[in-house]
Length: 209
Image (cartoon, rainbow, N blue to C red; front, top):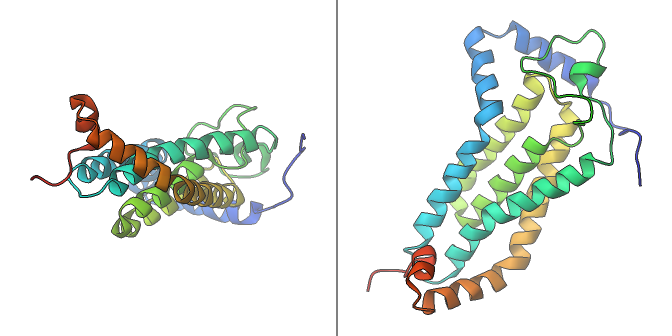
């Protein structure tokens, strides 16, 4: 079903944030520009670190959760993109009259604004990583919130875009991990027991015997 636009309106908050962005020191603006473009790579590094750690742990659940984290994050992106394709909300950097120029290039028409894919990815990664290693929530949740805020700060999303992206990504990741952790754990256990060197290398042999 085609939806002409979203009904939420956070234009006033968008203007407040983008105005504050232009009055911020140059180094702050530069930091946000870099973070909004490349910050998701840090979640990729965390995926690898959590997987590598899981290879030496007893049981197969840790390996399963580590493997599921990037998978459910990718699924969240697909769902976010599907929602975006049904909602033709124009980017605020083109639609909001009198708004300060965006700090990064405004995406072209057709790359719609709602929801924020960056925020959906960050929300999903934050939740999935925290479910794999609980104490990581102290790092991943602030990083996800910072990513979402940066999309508004640089001028390419409304606040409601990023809020919905975080909610969509985080909730979908949690549901998928809960649903798939059991089957994935059994697959990881079978892989560890297979004796195939490449397969055992991927899952790890567990604690040294």
